[in-house]
Image (tube, rainbow over all chains, first blue to last red; front, side):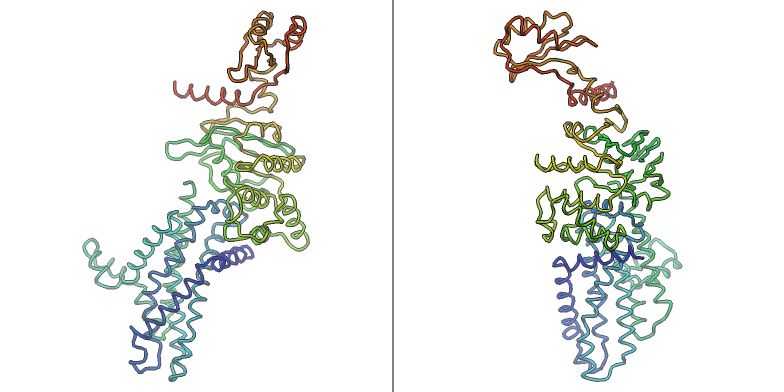
Length: 244
Length: 312
């Protein structure tokens, strides 16, 4: 546990040692604000809730999370530090988990810094804070799922641009798994049962149901299982690709 | 002790490391020599626990690298090829991080940090980010990381690569001070280094061990072993006279500096005869030397002989 914590601290510190953290946080906050107030029609709706704010999170994550995750393992491989890291007395799981947690915590920090939106809506009306809390939780879990996908893909290449594009593409599929855009493509190859299963994998539908204020255990389990699956794949990919 | 047993690593049809077995005891500094792509780094990566062998086993200080991976890594200090470290960190934060991962605590931790910073002269750059440091400093940060926990066994992949002659000398001196009670394996291209720091050398090529001996024994295999070289202004006369000595097999003149070398017949010694001859004939000699053997020549013979065999 101590080792994981040490690795976690180093990782999180490295975000703030480079401009990555500051650029990410500024852009995330600026875009989240702009989308909420302009595209989302925050004032025009005349309702004291944060629906227009949270609705844009999946789309923000779609290109901002890959920007964070692309460097997670690709950079370690490129600079050779992966050899240093994995010959220290740490297990593969500690390394994978600590790196993931650090990136997740970093996005969590960015998410917490959106609190002025909550202050604004509380000042203007009396929102349902339970729903807002659930939405934040859902958003955070979804970010974790995006990150786990990105971490795994980042381990498969030493090229960060490739990692970024592939992660964005895979996340896009997961996001829209429940829509005809994705389902029609798979319908050509698979029976209805598989199609229903794919539809059930949609990030968007699970996020939407949490952000309605219902913290359903199944949605939470869905996101945690997705994270677990991709992190497991992450460790396998690192093991396979170590030699090159 | 570091021990490898029939260590083999294959990538598909390509065999990078082929059935390598050796034991290194405390007090031994083993030099790993071989052409590029010979399997040196792959072997070291397997000892360090980074790559898993296809077959065979490794133990470090009694711990099986595969089964007791964490204990084996605790006992080992490893400098990977190219001395990688996290560029955005400073030597101070980087070494503190390594100390924490290695589980160093309290006073001992401070002592170890001070000791490696002192030994590798990192004081001047402690708070600069590593990516802005020169190659020599980066390499020293890597070395500091490897010896920070004062490990029983050290594996250093090209520890002096990219250092200037003074820095090379310092690193070799450092290895020598640690050599007495530790198990050290270094890989190098620089053959003079073998002389300065190693008391045992293994030459590998195409993943196979071709020679395992002390540097002195390797030199004795050289054509130059027991040969006598001299420099004179009377090149042709000296050459003429030397080739008449009974135990001299051949005489060669270096085309560049006109240094003459006389090679003895196998098992014979010619130094006395040569110096006698020079005095008797009054050949003006500015320098006369008994050669102990040339490692680079032995290295070439061993590794290229193997190549020709493989080609045939």
